[in-house]
Image (cartoon, rainbow, N blue to C red; front, side):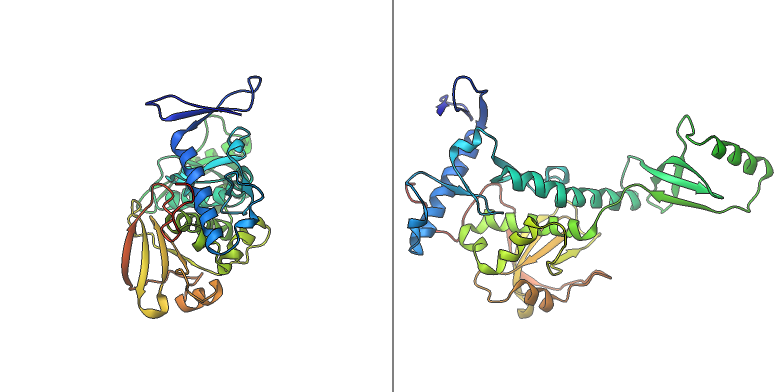
Length: 328
């Protein structure tokens, strides 16, 4: 492997051999790798577990699946840069994860959160793009483009060429006779799985907490159910830790250390309308117990009156709870 750095540049060029294509990696991402790997080793040493590392080589661990990764895996793209939340939701580069977790969980969970946002914006009148829908009148169906205005009105437009000729004939008949005796339905093709979207936001909160607090925080046993859920998308088993407030500023991105009331003490990760509660460091409660104390509900929003300390959204891994990295 060859690593070269041009003085004054922000890029590193990594290649495994001359025959293989070059992989260009930003300098800051290589720095994230080394700081993460050496901080993890410091955590292991603090716990008397440094012998779990097979060699002295720097080894990073994916915070989502805990699989080990070396610097060489930038070249195979097994080591990836994760946007938190997903880039399609406005997220920025924040942490390193493995390719499998980035891609698979992005497909199974994050894609549903993106569709959820599209759905919410469409039906609140905030979307400027139409969505394809199925329009059925008196049993005759055709594809239409659907717009929703901020006043709750719906506008349907047919494509230049109606896909079902019978629809054109029926609509002409209704127009000519001015009949009001008809029934219609509109079925949007924009669908998503709410529980998978919910897990995506928990994933965002987990990675944000990792960026802020580091290895000692995410390696708490009480967070293992989150990693297990992300590895098994078939059935959603995580408790309800999410909040949603459509009236919240969509540009609001912050992390709260909730102090009062006492039963709500937690870490609250907020991105726009979405919020996720996670346990504070050293909180003995399980995720189930935390959810029970918060009283979160599926059928309607729950409004909280809380006080605490607000931490700005991180722009890079900070590892605030971890010891200084070994080797600088």
